[in-house]
Image (cartoon, rainbow, N blue to C red; front, top):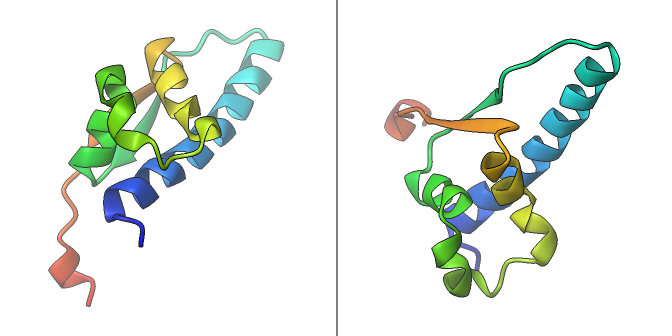
Length: 90
């Protein structure tokens, strides 16, 4: 069973790929862009994406899912934590 942190982390990777695609379009159009924001409501996933020291704890995550870490490291994406009240959803 996957933890919510793992699922959120993998989801962040997919979003990062799409944001990277958008960055490339802006660069081709010769626009200067700041890092694109990525809002996340899971502090564990956010920590894993910005802290390479935790790589040993994520052995079950596929290597392609480390894409988010590279995007954050090179300043293409900036992570923001948002609070999500999950009890209000149900």
